[in-house]
Amino acid sequence: MSKNGFWVFGYGSLLWRPGFEYSSRKRARLNGFRRAFCMYSITYRGTPDNPGLVLALDPQKSAFCDGVAFQVPADTASQTLAYLRERELVTSAYVENIQPVTLECGADVDAVCYVINRDHSQYTGNICLETQADIIASSSGNTGPNWEYLFNTADHLTEIGIADPELDQLVGMVKSRRLA
Image (cartoon, rainbow, N blue to C red; front, side, top):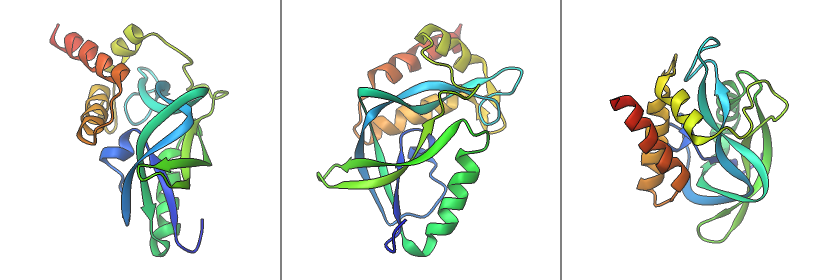
């Protein structure tokens, strides 16, 4: 964190529910990670008995993840970081680290990122889209149904002009399961 505040990278629920004040919001790209439903949710979008799935940044050398970088002003930096840690590190399935992201204007900034801990029991690895759709269509946790998380994320990516064909395919699969 600097005297000017810090940046945080959003790729999932932070896109549509950041929960903190920011002075700037810019589209951004994080290289070396992919956006993936690779984390079981046992609190927010599922339960220990019926886990849901949430997105995580999964390291992959040739991948990238497009999302949003939020600039947090210095005067709210410490309270924002405390809020993010309470929200994102609830089960230690994410690891907080600093990664370089490229803003849409071409500038590179260091941003706080929440990356999956592949050694954690909530890490799913690569489960197929069919299984992801089954889980997302049928899970719910203390912040609501799992499908709502997927739909909100996909809608907000579309709103800001970020294409994610795999997420769009998953939306269609979950919608068909919910209608069946």
